[in-house]
Image (cartoon, rainbow, N blue to C red; front, side):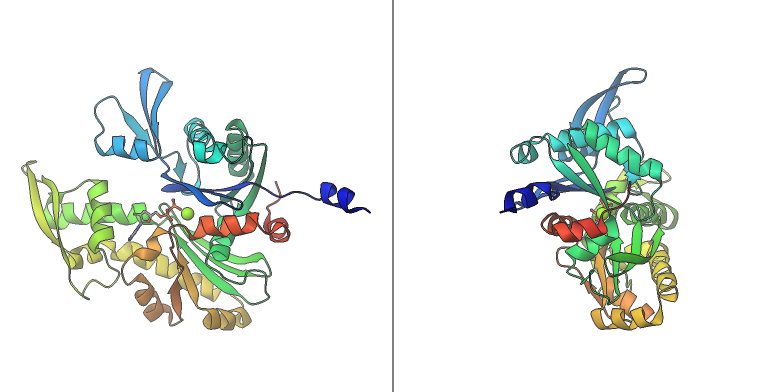
Length: 347
Ligand code: ADP
Ligand code: MG
């Protein structure tokens, strides 16, 4: 008899989940899966001082970035997981939320967004305001490591402790989760971009060879490794001679790329050590049972799982499809109202 009353008085959940990453933005929709996956980049010109004209967002902006000419600029409006340029982040969100994939499913969606653990109230507010201005009807926030753990299939609601490591573009977050709560989180400003930068610096210093950030990222993905001496691979890179400034190509060995990446990877491993030191022993025994799980693009670095296993002496596994695991977790939260209520952040 009260079924109508009951169902209409219950909160009805949310429609879409936005994984607003430093490198990539993914959107998942309830019942539809991942409906958008684009680089978090905006390209613009500045026809007059302080007045910016957007000429491309997402993949279009990334393509423009690769051949940027004089008056076209590109910006990644999300830095270290939080909004660094409010206006461009809002424009980017507006563009993504009004894409035909999203608009075709929901006109004014109720949005769940994840944020790095421990962001400030001001940073939370910036994301909420940007989503509202971009057309969201309602905005809920969740912690990013929670979305990552759910997406990686970890039993976040159980009393068992689990450890998720999300290695993104700007940051790496190492989190221990139990009973739908983040028990401990260690975040370091070290992710894919810092690794790319380390590769650029290494080749300039050691080989007098200047490469772009894009080439460094391509080398990292093609032949980068966490264990430099294992299984040497080669790749040809285009760059410039640091002394003459002239264009040249160079055959690059995975051993050099691995050595270039080493300090940044060690920084991530040190964060894992610190997180384990701060984790109650009974939860550590659960983590041993479940294994440490890696997600985010950095989880794909060749043999990083092996290196972590050797250094922390615990089992390690990589989440299925680590670049989309976080969005997958958000999608699962959209479908589980009780879980979403438990993990939603107060604002
Ligand atoms: P964010 O959540 O911060 O947007 P992502 O989880 O999308 O970051 O990961 C992006 C990072 O992962 C980039 O720095 C990219 O270079 C890196 N990445 C993507 N694929 C690979 C790969 N196969 N090997 C190593 N790094 C990768
Ligand atoms: Mg991410």
